[in-house]
Every structure is written in C-alpha cells, then in structure tokens.
Length: 239
Figure 1 (cartoon, rainbow, N blue to C red):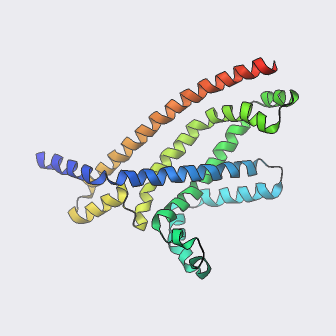
Figure 2 (cartoon, helix red, strand yellow):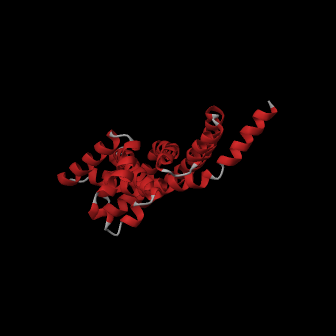
Figure 3 (tube, one colour):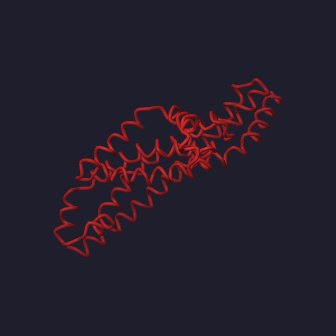
C-alpha cells in the first residue's frame, strides 16, 4: 500500500510540469475563439444574408465534426499544400502548438458564437425599444443595455465551454505536445500502469476545472452586481 501511494505521488509530481502547457493551450484558444465567436455572432445577427449564410455554414461545419479530426486535418493536412509551405504562415503552422491552438480556437468559436447570439436575443425587447426611443445610438445601446445583460446570461454557458476546452487540451497529446495527457502517455509507456497514471491525470484535470468553476462563479456575482448598477443608472438617466 505504501509503495502504491509512493508511485501515485511520484506520478503526480511528474505530471505537474504539464499544467502550464495545458493552461496555455486552453487560455489562448478561449481568447482567440471568443474574439472569432463574437464576429460570427454579429454576422449571424446581421441583416446581410451573405454574412448570415457564411456564419451558419462555419458553425455547422465545426460543430458537426470532431475536434480530433480538425486537429489532424490542420496538423497533417496543411503541409500537403506547397503554397502554404512557402507562405509566411508556415513557420507557425509547422509547429504542433500553433496547430493545436488554431484547431481549438476554430472549434470553440462555433460554440461561442451561438452562446453570444442566444444571450443577445434574450435581452428583453422592451429595454431595447426604450433605449432607441430615448435616442440612444446603437453603440451606446449595446454598451449600456445589451452587453451588460447578455454577459450575465452567457457566463454559465460560456463557463461550460471553457471547462470543455480545458479537457479538450488532452487531444493535443496526439500531435506530440507534452501537456498533462502527453506526459501521462509517456509515463505509461515506461511503467505499463495506465490505470494509476490516468487516474492521477484525471485528478489534475478535476482540480483545474474546479478552480475554473470557482472563478466563473465569482465573475457571475460581480457581473450581476454591475448589471444591477447599470440598470439603475439607466433608469435614472432616461426615466
């Protein structure tokens, strides 16, 4: 029993160096995917049919295919095009880290776009009409009325997407990245004890996601308070 505990502790210490790479992949993908998702959400809400169709097609493509397949297509597939290998993007796309980030960002953007669009659509129409009737510009209306309320509504769903992306970083191990799962696979090839090692890896992911849940809950409380203050300010200013 003592030997088993010692082995688990040894594996835990061995897998810890993979956490920074796991977080780098997750945070970079979430930020880039969030920016792209916002653009897609605005395109989906646009009155221009071309933009709406392009956004719908993108979302259907990336939500309808597995992330692992997308990673493989980018990592193994892009190198098949001579034009790309001679372009300025090749120094980045030849690196597995950037390929993983690129694939994960494109994937999460499709989900984030629907989260943002749904949150904007759920803002009460009466408040939007009231803002327009009092002469608010579109930019001011989004800043004072729509965005604060949409942010509160989207946080739970967006928090789930963040947690999913942290877990999705495990797929980066398939293209030679040594994050937590990659180090676990390396340790298994040396010790032939997959159950214990993957159990330790699972505990690490569980700890990371628990920390993320706590952060998201704090953000929900903070944004709820800020939204209430903004609503009261809006009433005082325009009513």
